[in-house]
Image 1 (cartoon, helix red, strand yellow):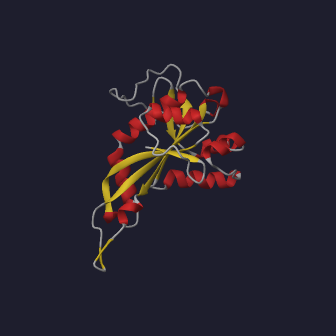
Image 2: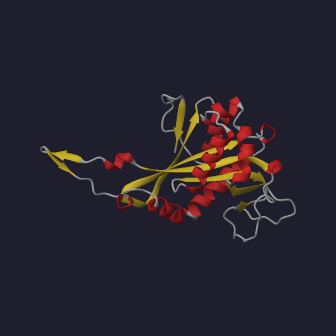
Image 3: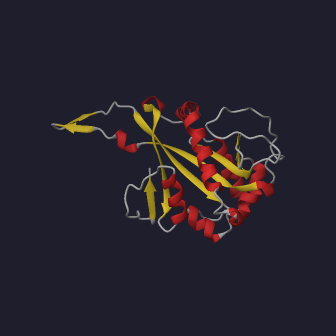
Length: 220
């Protein structure tokens, strides 16, 4: 878990699923996250996938714990024992933040010289895609998205070796994968000005002003 003065990020667990399922019945959230509504049973199956798959990292964002002395990302951290279900009750849940890892398919392309195929033996790069959702509308536009994203990015970069090692261990053909993260990207609905502004404020830049086929802008 990651605790800051404003937010607490905890791994996505089974006891979070009913609340998450309620959130995802909202049509605005479905559009913002390019998601289809699932049954509660399907949502539980998805939670297991997100929790166990080596290519996914998911945290539920909660309001910070009252009365705790918290640390800011980047400062010297302090370990505390937090009990699931007590530190993250339903009333504290804000949204979620995710990292999806991919092997860069562009690095797999072999070259053809004079009719002969030359195998590309360079390590295949690993890419990361970030997603964030503030589900509780009464807590939007309060700076919590920035705090959640900042905390999550801090965690990714301070834990990147273990994150990438776990991904390589669960990826077929891991011997071809590199050992570094090439870049992080985010894909946002072109009409979602608030999210675009949030990521641009973190240093992400649009790779094109023209949305893709799905109406999304990609920032890196």
